[in-house]
Length: 111
Image (cartoon, rainbow, N blue to C red; front, side):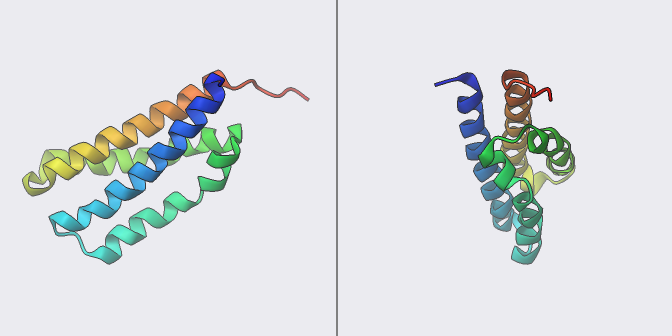
């Protein structure tokens, strides 16, 4: 398997883990509606991530930043949610790094 394919598979798996970690915020007292609404925007890049489109990976890295900021803020401010925030922060950061690695590993198409 190529590095490009491996990073694509890992990025999709991490996308699933990030979505699951956002739903786990229910355990620390967030309403389920808020958690589901936080996951809904993550559906936007899913098709492009699965297809391996470089353009989707490029904008999805920017798309991950608000989730990083949210997890970091909750980690620092909310003592009751630190365990969920640390897991979410680790997963979102891993997802971000995997998408950047995919962009580095995949060839650019010149036309």
